Length: 172
Ligand code: AR6
Image (tube, rainbow, N blue to C red; front, side, top):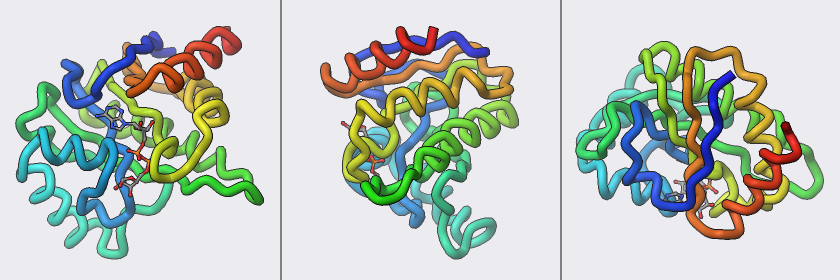
């Protein structure tokens, strides 16, 4: 089981082997953490995303799946792009959020990444309440069969940090 570390801050500043991006199926960038990663990482990331779309995922990256690119100018080796579920009040999509974490860690294992930073996937534009997302994310990481040694959740604001802190305390 990876060691879980929580920090409040900007994921683009993390010195880790791999940074996870909360992308959308197009892999062509967007707002939130996706925008910040492409801005700070530079055009090499988008170039590789375009190639992935042309080859492996012509219809886009399905929700819950993960794929790696260079991290460009970021202080990491790789960006692992995953697509979180859009929140729904009527339907439980927590299995898709868990799949994002599991599949991102599987990609990290293929790369040989030992330290991986995650944002609070789906809790921004995609509308997942962070109090609901945090226990799903923590549990998925704790249950993952992976050689990753450290998973660092990088929470942008105090509220998200505290939600993850509570979820971690309750999981122990
Ligand atoms: N570092 C860490 N966390 C961040 C940063 C940052 N630099 N910037 C934002 N967050 P979101 P989603 C937090 O919207 O909900 C994009 O347009 C933010 O406060 O980035 O999965 C994509 O292209 C929130 O807690 O991702 C997709 O279309 C969390 O990151 C869509 O948004 C996730 O918010 C994906 O939506």
